[in-house]
View 1 (cartoon, rainbow, N blue to C red):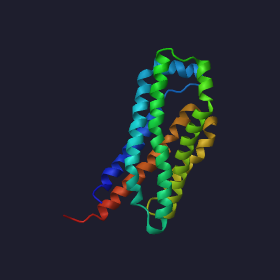
View 2 (cartoon, rainbow, N blue to C red):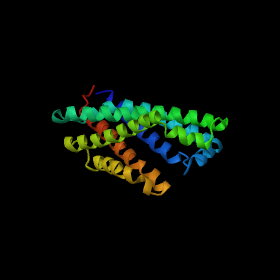
View 3 (cartoon, rainbow, N blue to C red):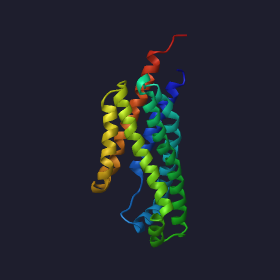
View 4 (cartoon, helix red, strand yellow):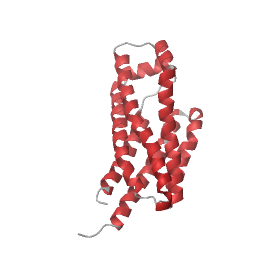
Length: 208
């Protein structure tokens, strides 16, 4: 169990990086505004890309700590949930690279608003983006169900995950600031998971 504290710390770090990146990500109402933000606020754009990449790596490293919370009867479902959620987390690294590439195009005037609209609606890109988003939220929901079933964490932790997933379809109706703040639900929940896993490993640790 010596590795659990490190994995749990990675999970907390990844959740924090994810929330900070989502909170500072510049967003526009249309393609023209987004291009302008990518050019004028390039520093923040790059910072978000770095944070998302860090989140992708550390959340993946933090997944093993979640496995320690599952009891025998919930291990199979829990592993399936972690597998799906990990796919979504790894997808964050691809999204971070997409942000960097998009900023490079905007800074060098290599793309116009009309072309951006056409590119964003391209079938191949849409399939990959919606596949990644679907894996992330489906994995989060499955993880919440697995945590409810195992009963080794406080009930508010999976409840926060379920609430975060439930708010996703309503995000377009929420103010921009409120929409970005919903990421704090998954951040707090994953931090709670990591802390619980670390406490459990310390409880069962064998003194030297």
